[in-house]
Image 1 (cartoon, rainbow, N blue to C red):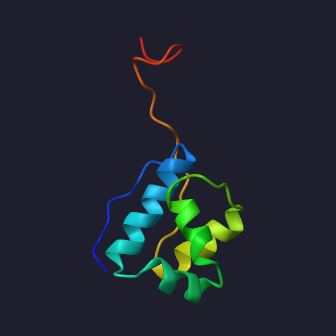
Image 2: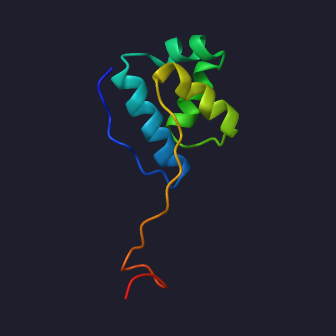
Amino acid sequence: MDSLPPTSIRSLRQAGAALRARRKACNLTQNQLAKATGTAQSTISDIETGVVSVSLDVYLRLLEPLGGELCMTTRAAQADTPGHGT
């Protein structure tokens, strides 16, 4: 698998895009990931396009065969966001 940089995720669409990028870096199809995790291929497609919300348990199950993990960090303050910056 190609090494991927950490990804900041703040929406379902970003989570889906990150999952898709990791799956492709592992050279797996949606069908192969579905079989490896006991998840329907259509569900993986919906997750990757950001149209469905799944439990954290399902997302973690999908990350396992992809060698991924979920990490939490402090969100960086953005100067152009009201209430942040100077």
